[in-house]
Image 1: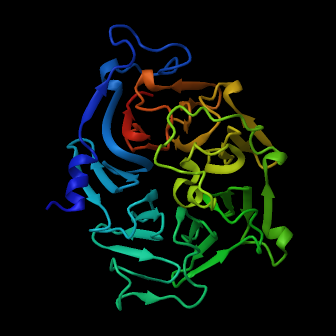
Image 2: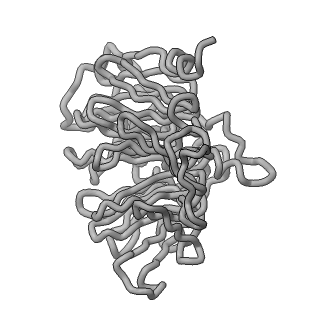
Image 3: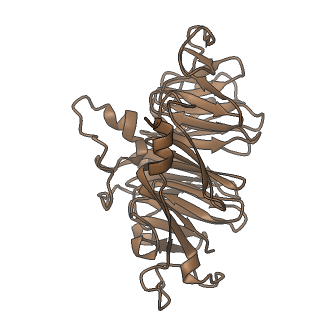
Length: 396
């Protein structure tokens, strides 16, 4: 019998499909979709390549000449030039195969947050696992694991993001708060400390080392430099304060059918769907993605309130009325070389050069309207993950 990893390698990623757009014989784009005016023109048949998967793509991370793909059925490292792939599942490297995010740290180590399996790290040779109970490199909780003292484990088994401050300290977004790793264990900040909500989904760290946590209840800023005053250390903003516009109904173009947000206990969408679940009612206080631009401004994506920007004084909002492809934002990535923001929404992908939006949809080369993951690789190629496929865009 073939192993799960072998089956996944054979079935998960089956082929590359060049895509020329809606009408290959003519230029397939209009003023509101396709490459922006003034961009370098790439032959239409070379703009897009699509790889078929049979699972949800939750996260993407560029790593040199490879792309890490986090899915509901494991983690894949894919080399586009050769189409070589290495797959990790619960048989060879993960405690949980539901990979909520992947990120390459400044030291080159890979970090992956999972649903129910805690946080995993990979140095290229060995995996290590961090849970609320202990840490180790074995896939089982055995004698080789080191048990954490009470309260020193990571906040929860559901980990949605990590970020590194200027001192190299790692912060983790978990289902039960904001966890800080000091090398010997974690300290988890909760609503009792100053978080606006315990479900933390996204993290961004500014130039001053302040931690910005996106939660289901809004945005919280934590300043570790301040004294013991709670008011000095903690500040929060919600939709009422200008974080996003009033919510509009989700487009619902390609909802993930595997999710069941309407379960009676109200837990499933947190545990499995997270910010990728479009079958639940929209919530503009639900922060699904965040990053800082080259000018040091914070950008956050909301579940129904569009895109929001904080300049340090006030919030500004961008929605479909301003040209955004959808008001439910799932993921963002900044092409720092070109200073372009790429935004995955429930209505396609938006390219934003901080002046105008240019939108890409299914007819332009995307596999699905709902785009859950976005990454920009060192060559400047853009990668988009959806339900059932990864798309690469080689235009500007």
